[in-house]
Image (cartoon, rainbow, N blue to C red; front, top):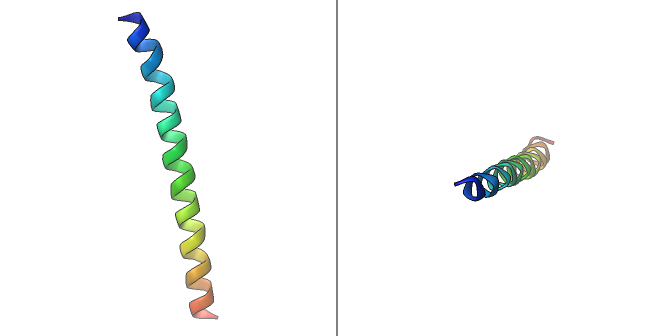
Amino acid sequence: MNKIHNLTIPMIISFIIIAVSSATAIGLLSYHVVSRMVA
């Protein structure tokens, strides 16, 4: 049980980091597209 717990937390943390970074990348991309359309 302890081994599973030790593996689960880093997986959750890495998943959160990946989700945040991908969301940031998508946000920056859409921001660039919108600013080009408006300009």
